[in-house]
Image (cartoon, rainbow, N blue to C red):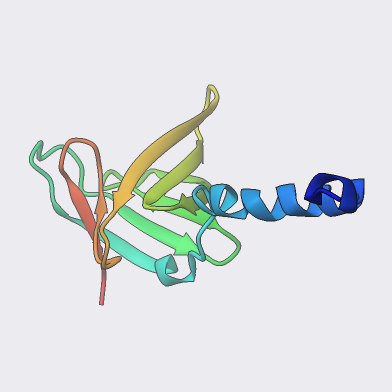
Length: 118
């Protein structure tokens, strides 16, 4: 009797699901508790903003800008990508940062980066 005939359809389904687990883990949402706290821009090649990012529990964020304005939203971390979804007047806007491997820097696409305030 061949292996195909000896396994029930539910066994085959389980084999397929377990074989897909490595693929699902490639796009996992990471634990982001290490982000909670205040982060300040410490390198900004454009010299255009001096914002402060405040990460709160519940994946919420508040950005305090140097001119006194505040923007709120949500964040999530997927692999080494930090995605902010901000509530701005016209529509929600996504902002992406790359997270350094040691979690010490949040790097913007222009090379600017934020570090945790002590």
